[in-house]
Amino acid sequence: MLFELAITFATTILAPVQQKQPSTKTQIIYVKESKEPCTGVAPMECLQVKESANADWSNFYTNINGFKYTPGYRYKLRVKVTPVKNPPADAPNVKYTLVKVLEKKRVRVTAANSQWTSIAGKKWILSKMDNADQPDEAIWVEFDTDKKRIHGRSGCNGLMGGFSTSGNSITFSKVAGTLMACESSLMRREGSFLKQFGDRTFKYQVVGQQVHLLQNGKPVLQFKLQDKDAGQDQGSNGDTDWASISGKKWVMTRLNEASISNSGVWLEFDPAKNRFYGKGGCNNISGGYSTGNNAVTFTQAVSTFMACPDAGVMSREADFLKTLGGHTFKYTLTDGTINLFENDHLVMQFAMEDKSTTATTPNQWTFIGSKKWNVIKLNDATLTDSGIWIEFDTEKKRFHGKGGCNSISGGYNATGDQIKFAQAVSTRMACPDPAVMRREADFLKLLSEASYHYDVADQTLNLYKDGKIILMFGMQDK
Image 1 (cartoon, one colour):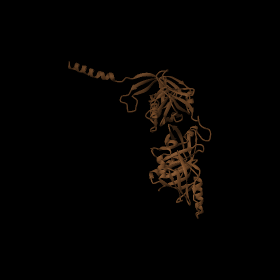
Image 2 (cartoon, helix red, strand yellow):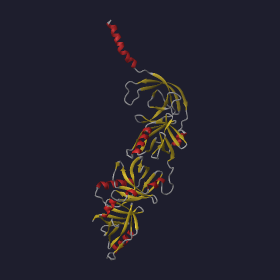
Image 3 (cartoon, helix red, strand yellow):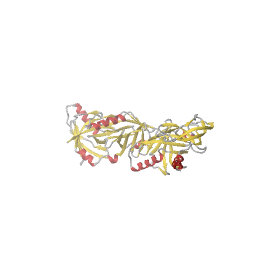
Image 4 (cartoon, helix red, strand yellow):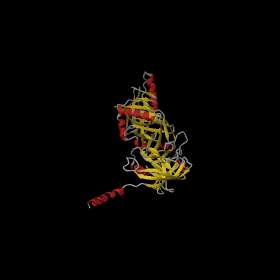
């Protein structure tokens, strides 16, 4: 009796355990004639498999024991599927073993279907998201079909990642981006796009000049298809949209990995002459540039040679000039920012300031009027102890000073970032040094009945014409 009770107890306890043991099964799978790039633990190439003739192909991340795959052949296999107990981390929980090759047919392999060929090498600009029209061209993607990589813009930030195609399906993987912050509406739109786009598989269709990415038969994202060279200005001034950059002051907000505020570094562009000028932080800078194919190339920048007391400002200026001069960048214009990229990496970013609204303020002229301004640069000559200076009476719109030998005076008017001088008058003394007299004559000629763009930065008052510094004054307390 005790023995029978023990048997009954053992059967009762062990039976559920035996019922939970995984069972081996056989199934039919189809194997495609070509592999596709995929990412498991690391980037690899995956077999493409499906369980029925009418199903979609999908990545197969493991091996089939006993099966020797030959590219260019499509297979129908019977395999044994065996559960693996306690598999290692990142390892499959089932094992596949070939039972029999049921079919093996040679299939012609093409590099890409005709639709994908028409998409590759083009720029996709997002036109609709969830059937909502997009207000601008801030979101776009381009493809490198050799490296199976994507790059572009997700709105505010740079976009990069991998992709693979199979039939009329496309899979995006490891989508990443830069980490800049922009105005809130653009950031919200960027977040919605990345949520729908990143690390997902879509069916795609090319309809005329539109690319539709679909899930469950419905368009999720729609792009207008544009050649990367489309819309480029074939004239001497480079890209058509580069003209919209002129007339603005572009203040640097990012240099390499560092976000910067109040940098004192800025550029302005003259597209008619393909010249730029601005401030490196301490010194005035200028140079040339050219554009084409969404890229801008800068010549080596030239600068003045002042030394500023802040070592950090001087160091950043040196980094800026080294990064800018002689380099070519891909660029994007997005919501008041210029973004410059090298190798898909954001290197510099500039924020727009409208010169008509950010230039002269009453406080600035209060500052100018409280100082004495000594000429330290006249045309291309750098001067020390020149004896040439002016002061401004901001209430009467008058200036007075010394031309080197004689006293001078006159009127001026400042509007926006422009200053216009009336005819200067001077005393009629003759000084013994002919060089001083010649320099005074040059100065009066430049100052009389002349208009200049101007700025005040880092203890200098700078007067520009055609992007070039004509007169530079150093600040001195009265």
